[in-house]
Image (cartoon, rainbow, N blue to C red; front, side, top):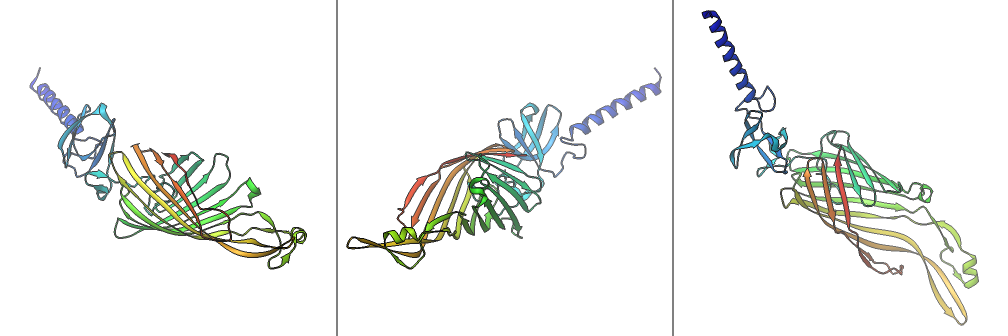
Length: 353
């Protein structure tokens, strides 16, 4: 073997080891080198997450340097995913508080946090499904219905960011129709504004809105303001549409983490609804019952308290359960209905697509 051939073999061996070392120093792609300032979040198969800089990836295990635990070796077979962190401001106390598609929801209400375009998700409730589409980075559109596909509701929300990343505002609307039930005559809406302070995983929201419901049905009533005897009263009844229920609605909601994959959620709604109605005063004169028809105003307060838990072991799905309580308080003397309180528990499943 000549000296020239020996030199060529040595050069080839050096090039081979140099290329191997280059690949080992590039853990995710060939453009990232050892010592790069790129942060990654590594999720293990058991759901544990580690945030740090990738120092080495030899194909069998990954060496990362974390802020809290120092350098850690993680076998490749024990890694579910490796993802870049594009916004280091989302890291709070060693955890990534990224704005995923589920972070804008509580039990029923929404917050003002924006989500990125394309973060669409579906929610399956016991009563029916929802589908929501993030059309832009600040605007989302959704459709809600029951398993009977009636009634159905459309929703829209637009978020406004501020210089403070923890402070956000939003406006939104819900518009619904009874569908094939009652021949689409029943309809209503809820228009609202929210202010949210906090991160996607820990925040508080205060909301104010105005809601209304048009029953779209008629009832038999006599003309208002006249005295009738028994026969005259029943003979004078006419068909007229029922009045809409309407009034302001406020909400106070929040979420906080209670474990690595669990969060406590509190949601609430208070509605101060009024309903124009017709009532009848009766009086007995001898054997004759006399009636007088009057228009009145029913005032009702509806309080809904919704504490619950959300469990999210995977990025693209979550499960949520809540123990809801509804309290209806009637402040009007024109109504014979008593104040009632009843439970309304719920379960729901979130899926990103």
